[in-house]
Image (cartoon, rainbow, N blue to C red; front, side):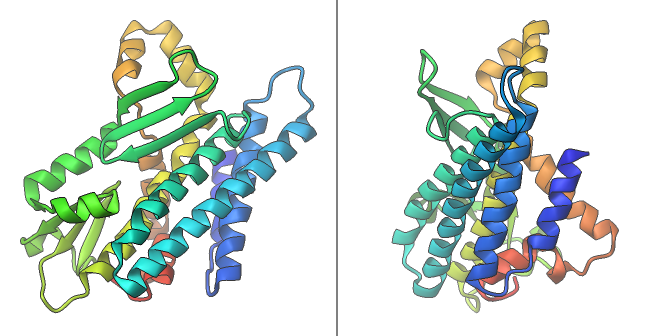
Length: 282
């Protein structure tokens, strides 16, 4: 129920017609996410109001960094300069890490993570084995789908930090996804000499950031996941290899809820945000 309330509030904050509104959405929604998550993970001897405020200001800090990461994507869109994309990805990962720490009721600097395709790296200053590598199963499916249906674009992947594929099959896209699509953190663009490919990529990177911004759900479910691991040897072994990106079904669920209410495609929250930073509908 609390997660649903957060998503509803985020929806009301979502209209982004200028950078002030965009910053307000990113900072405000992530402050709420951080505060509520901190309360969920509050220790019995901690004061709720103090924990909530700490989670809020840390979440707000993370939200500001994710906002700035999206503005770098917009600069890429305007200039076609790929030099903006790795700094944007690093900034986005830092912001999401801080939001995750806030929702986990931890200090903002304790744990950092970054995804690259199906690869998930985390560095935890509080753990004896600080660096840990695991596989994201939903992202793995998205990457496998890209390799199975499209041509891997090595150069753009290397320059951007995102798995990018060039599709030559028009059937890979529905009538609304005219030029590109994002499946979790996999980007596909349609081979067409009449389009601005960099503008398409910018639009789809924002969709990827919508996927990564929902990593906080794993912090919300930290205790149930921990108990499951303690009671199941299978899940314990699974967790050594995989880090379930529950943010994928959460982000997809928000998308599908809107379609159930017959929201026009271009009025979907995710599409409106992606349009704001890439200027055009794709």
